[in-house]
Length: 315
Image (cartoon, rainbow, N blue to C red; front, side, top):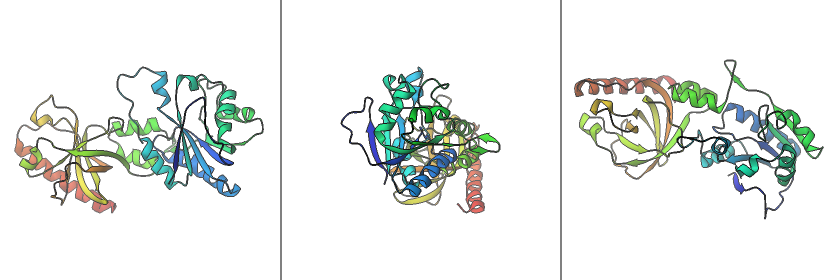
């Protein structure tokens, strides 16, 4: 399991670690581009016989630099990021608190006062990684100058999908536009979110399609409004389901956005359980039906489409 160490600048009361390879980046989503960076760092660490560490940040720098009208949502929370880094063989995740003071450091001071405290033998990062506010002087091409031969620098080139750079921003856009297939391809895995099962209005039960109502964390990024083929992890078991992200507009136009899931072949009461939702495939948009019969007929078609999808993909 990846060890998590939280840091704040200036770094105090910190015991210098053994020599190690350090991969730098925010790594939101830990997508295929991020994986390429970490896998390159892991290979180097294995060759040198030293541990692998990641230097990342919290919160996202945009929180410090911009005035946000709503909370910034992430593709991966810190705990999710740590779990993914564990799978990639990372020994330690250093989480640097991103503050105005840190943002104002010169690149040389950042290397001297932050990077060197981690005792790196090699530093690995993506080609577009920045470690300061000025991209002209805090880019990866300049890092060797600031290293002053104290550590080696490895720059990992751009990772693309259909000739487009894979990035966290592109993946968020794909999710917002319902293209979870594209998001999953660029992530290199099925996108997941978490939540807590709470009481709802029980309309699904009355329609013959009982749903769980999922309260989702404010900081997690949800796909756009629509109906999706999903899998839901309850305790240690995954179940097929069809999920609705929407406002239940058939029953009125002023409802808040909710996440409701009809779990196929499942009839237990599970209020209070924490769940993981894997967003496999977009089925259709949210539709306002004139009558209940039309909605029920559509739900039957959604169930057929969901079962066919998972049968065809064997996921």
